[in-house]
Amino acid sequence: MFATTPVQTIRFAEQAIFVKRDDLLHPDFSGNKARKFQYFLEQDFPLVKKLVGYGSAQANSLHSLAALTKMRGWQLDYYVDHIAGYLKQNPQGNYKAALDNGANIIEKPAGIELNLETYVQQDIQAPYESNKQLVVKSTVFVPEGGRCEYAQLGLDQLGREIIEWLKQNNMKKLELFLPSGTGTTALYLQRFFVTASSSDLSLPSVTVLTCSCVGGDEYLTKQFYQLTDNTDYHPRIISNGKKYHFGKLNRQCYDMWQHVNKQGIEFELLYDPVGFIMLEHYLNTANLSGDDLNKGAAVPVMYLHQGGLLGNPSMLARYKRKYQQQG
Image 1 (tube, rainbow, N blue to C red):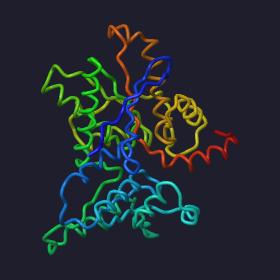
Image 2: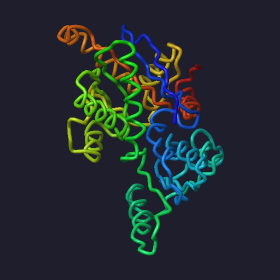
Image 3: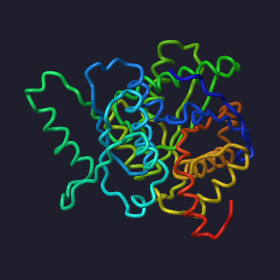
Image 4: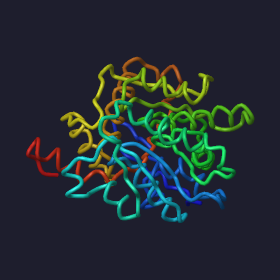
């Protein structure tokens, strides 16, 4: 469905880091959302008329699902906790892109104390699925961020691309790093590499490393277990011991974003700064502990660029207002 994305090299933490440019996949499906939703683009759904999702009004998944449903000729009903008044009056970013693609963005009714996920599952999904008169299901429900088995198809394809790149470059080992929200992308990639290597011992060895960007390491581990109890498929979580509050302005994150962007690749402002902060800590710790000597040679590292750049302008404006900086 998508063309193979290129791999580039940047200099980070005094060493070469490969960057898998999944942000270049598609203008409306960049990065992990393209991989997660590839299933819905490739499979036949002759009877489906509507897709239901939920999450933030500025989520990357909102934009991608809106583009997907437009392409498929489906209706998108996307539930959110609330839409800020400023955003309603001044649509921008993923919210505006979703509206432009015909999304029906629905606020959770006032007075309902259930969290958004429980509300959608209990009040929207459960009544639909319990309707015995529905001989054919015409609506597809997608968990927040694409945290479901549907994601496997596209992420297996990404895994194959990485293995093929390693073989072309005569590389036997790789540490693949990516920051996580729900951890779906990282887990399915780890599962792919474990399964592939167990069936063919000649394949390059890939270990998936990740960090938590949303709810802390315990939250991320819980997300892994919701997908599978097999801990062999759980990526390794790295941390510097500090918790970063998702969406909250942080000077260290802003400085890191500016630093990595100087390499000529624009990264996004929510996940990538935390990712590079954690990756820098990991690389520096490995160097100090001599882990690279124990391995015989440093294991190459690849950073997975998962896209999400559409939200950068509004986030950058917030940073500039707070720190009174340009660029």
